[in-house]
Image (cartoon, rainbow, N blue to C red; front, side, top):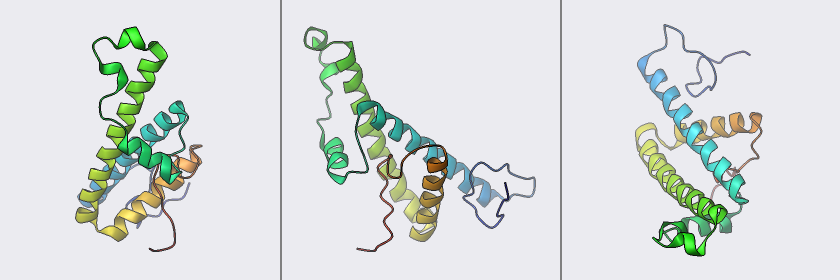
Length: 145
């Protein structure tokens, strides 16, 4: 696999001793965001949700913050699979909120252009790993609003 040493967001490539601190930091950020996006995509798949659909994504974000499985007597009302699904839905919602906060900070730290480049590289890498575009809820449309 050829590497483009000018791409600070190239994923899956080993760092060399000459890599500078900024590039190492950006690579670590990209790998962390990709791990977060992968977990989000896996949770959505497990729950049978398509986060590429704007309405589904909004529904997850607006879902009640208290999952049904968290009530003290939830075992009387819900079976193990419902409790697991409730925990997964709460985790998914929390990770989506966390990702939004991280993206806001990265937009300030890296700038919008570099953040977009990083997210595009992550999406490409996730597609090579077998995820459908948008499975993690990231919408990288080419048109501008």
